[in-house]
Length: 254
Image (cartoon, rainbow, N blue to C red; front, side, top):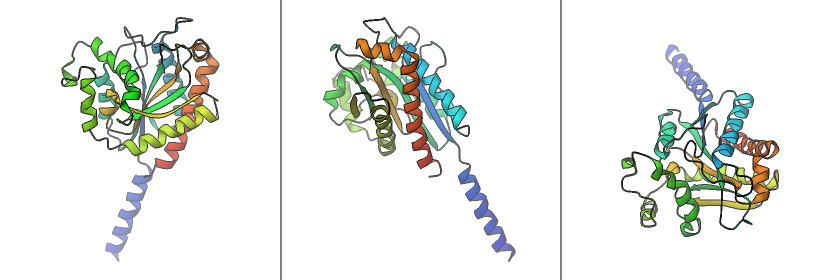
């Protein structure tokens, strides 16, 4: 009888531990410091500032509305962080359940280009998305120590290596990315550029599901003005939070 009670007690404790399993979200504000990212052509808005404002707003909302979640910002001020260091912050977190969200703002030579898109790591239609990947990965050329990139130099030839790499977290990354896009389109009424795959170093080296969000085009006058406004930034924060809340509720006890 004592043995049965002991076994039942252990089962109950295991269930309780599972229910209390912590969840971490790492929010990454792209660029920073001497790396301004893209710069708006109409109003001179800097991508690094937009990214940080949205990242901090998202972190604050998660802390307020979902206080059980561990929230980490890769940067909280205007500082430069190497790509590998951003991934290292994710990987140092020991929680089994975690999610990486990297916030960025898009740009294009075509000033009419507009809309939001969310990237996951992958090589499907890689040629179509190569310009975005090369632009976001180009920050590594500003870093003093480039040995961590193991010969990857952001050349077209270097992207062949991504085709040989498997990503264990693609399914959950895709689920979250689709939720983000649904909110951007359904709630914010942004032009839908869809969920895409691209070879982003920061996603490759982060050992968890992750996405890179391009909120809109800073090269488009109307979108730059909207993204620079408090209403625009709050709208983006609300949309990403709603997507995250849905994702978290579906995955918190898995």
